[in-house]
Image (tube, rainbow, N blue to C red):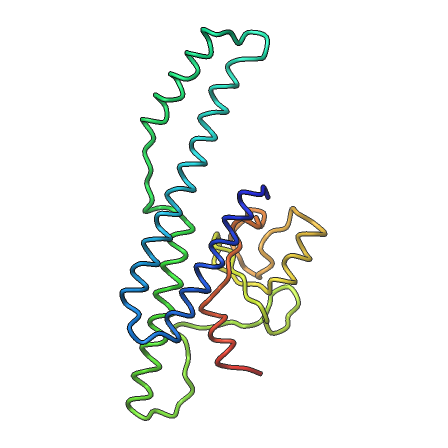
Length: 205
């Protein structure tokens, strides 16, 4: 993973942790959450732009080599670059990072609302997150401590275990039995599962 990708992942981790704290501990959270969602969207737009600009630069420079770059060709390179950048079309609605953030945020909000409704009705039943939560790590077969989700297939692993697995073999597919995803696990596609994290905190061993 490049340094820029590592920074992007660290920033995303900060966003998800911030969202979790806002949802759990702030009273008037609607405005703050909207502001945070706007920041995350703008950050994703910047990431896409930077990635597209890098591809444009590489495509243009690949047409030349050091021996045939002249003052005239430099001017053409600049014009081609500016033209390509001006035609960039960014579709943020399909950005996987943004979609995953919004999905986890929505699940977290739903869970908090359910818990509040349950408290108001004096319901003593065990509070559960929406859907079925599997807290068993498919690698170690033990309870997950630090959940990290593969946003490609949606399965969650224990961070320490999956990182150790990838260190031994980078060409590792999702270890969840029955997973239809055939792609190798990419660290860039692993993100903190905030919904499971909250569940684990509320349901300790």
